[in-house]
Length: 129
Image (cartoon, rainbow, N blue to C red; front, side):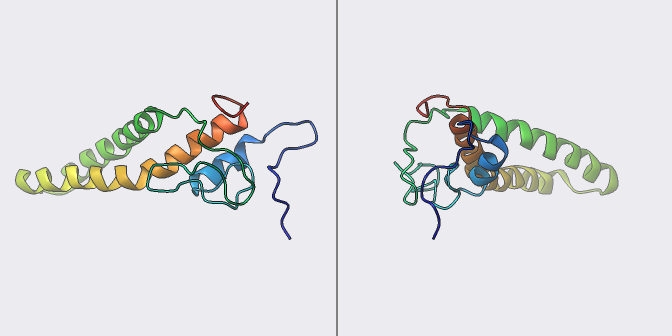
């Protein structure tokens, strides 16, 4: 049987690496078992497995800023390379690049928000003192 208490080492530290890995998967940063999100971007009020209160986070707009930064670093070089290798008409590009940006943003926002909440938990920030 799994121990349902939040994992901390003997010194009381909360390891940031495993917490981020759990957060990226949408799992509780403490136990890695319970689901972090009740809906797409709404965190559960508490972990159903270990009981860690998740509603004290203050992620605010930081996950969106991270996603925008990552999208820029992914899409701009990709656009440059595709445009230099292929002669795609401008009309098609007007459909492809915004569509790809929307798909990637939707795919990245929940894992990034989970990682931000996990970092806050591991560093005892916001409501995770």
